[in-house]
Length: 239
Image (tube, rainbow, N blue to C red):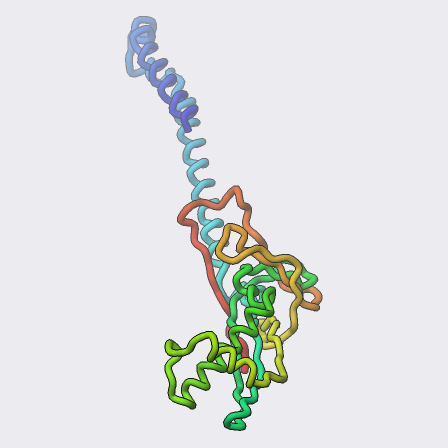
């Protein structure tokens, strides 16, 4: 653009300097103006117009590509991840079995056709720490006891919790570690690598046993800018 402007200014200066000289030689200013090389100016304008048209066409294509990237178009590439654990806890004092569970869910997306999925480390954190999962189950059990015996959790001390642990019988502990595809199919996953929750390394890669998974093409990091639109879509599994 700067080069085109320089050419236009140079052409204008040339025209200005040629007008009086041509008038003296030909004796006709109007006739001399016809001989001034205005073709260069017109050519520059045509080039600028073509450049603008090309730019508009390119921007239109980019806009069209962005519009094509809809939740529906990427639905098959995005998965739901469910993690946690559940168990049955028998309490001899009232001869009652308590059903307890804990866990959560998150999303991820395919990054390879052999079933690798990118997600956040905090999504599968409870899978990496089985003790934490069991602790959450026990807390869930105590909450249910509090409801049955009408006592407040804040009134409990360490001896109370110790008593609950010694007199309860957890059984049928089951860990939940699965991926739900957009069509509702559920598959177990294994962890390939995982970072750490709440840090700059809150990233993980898991894998399920599938072939020809619909991968979600990653953007070029060098082209990502602040305020760029980010799409988020979590599929709802079929029941």
